[in-house]
Length: 270
Length: 78
Image (cartoon, rainbow over all chains, first blue to last red; front, side, top):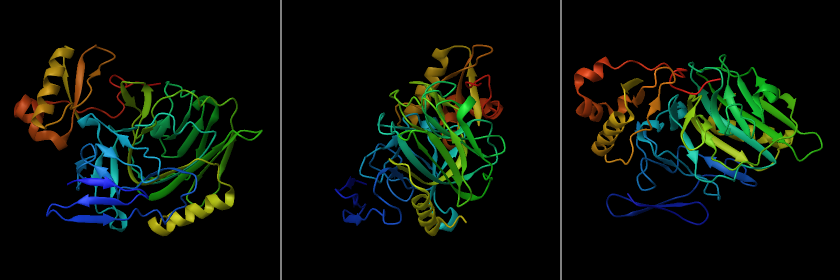
């Protein structure tokens, strides 16, 4: 089926019977100001390079961004594609990263920002090993040049900026087999650079970072860690992804909680 | 997750191409190299079982070893 994205984010889809279907992008449930990326399994998940929407249990070739930035994620290797699933919690669709799958961003510089805020609606499966990565923009084995969101062996939610040796922040609210909103935010535009990390509406874990190097141009990876640029992934995670939002700003506490509550209204996680 | 292992990269690439062709894809997967014995491997996903069996045969498919997630012999590790 043909598929065209219109200005404003709506979709015009050519149906099998030759008719046209206009579907509106549903961004009203979350703030759109400063929105860099919105990956929503209910929209724009394709089994090929943008023509055929995925049906249940099909491998995902392309997952297109719902924001205005067209920050789309793709996987050209068939055996490395995650699975699109229907009928998840509250009958919502999700994408299953099985621990051997990953998607890479087509844009390489969009997430090289001084301040970022992330929200990930997900279910962690119980097979994570240390460093299993959900989202990553770093290219060496010590992740010295970017940021990462990953799990430890206890499924705790860990984030780091620059170097996992010194700047990782563990939030022990991470659990398995339960839908959660995992979120973190970092700021380096302030005099004191710091990194906060929260799961659902719980308490932040707070750390500091110094001399953040966020300047190396390379892909952002979803589902694994790009340890060897241009080749493949490692530290891949097993999880269900229901929504991913990235904002080009460091949200203050009130805004942060407000977005969490907006997402909770849609996904009911706490 | 099963893994197909061969001694040379050429053997793996030929199998990879045959599976991809059957599925009308350009690439099935990127080969892995075992960091201990230097052999080459290709992940075999159940989702594509029919095509894989067509290429390598039922007998070999059922005897393929299971790959442990994050096996340090096959994936980069700290």
